[in-house]
Image (cartoon, rainbow, N blue to C red; front, side, top):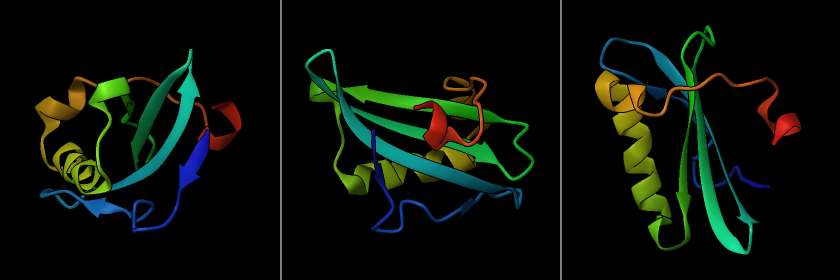
Length: 93
């Protein structure tokens, strides 16, 4: 997994309720297919999750930033991607 730390993808996003959301975005090839993954968690690491885009579903960085803001702002959208993460994320992916 190659991690994107440039273009402010590693900066926290504050939701409308004041919760700070952390993101880690990476890209890789899996099974011969290009994959983008966006990991997210709140400061307390209570709510964590992973959004994955494969093949033709992959997004331009501007669209990834839109998804980051949507995860931070929309609890219903965020709940679709919630799953437990092991920290540090970089070690396990």
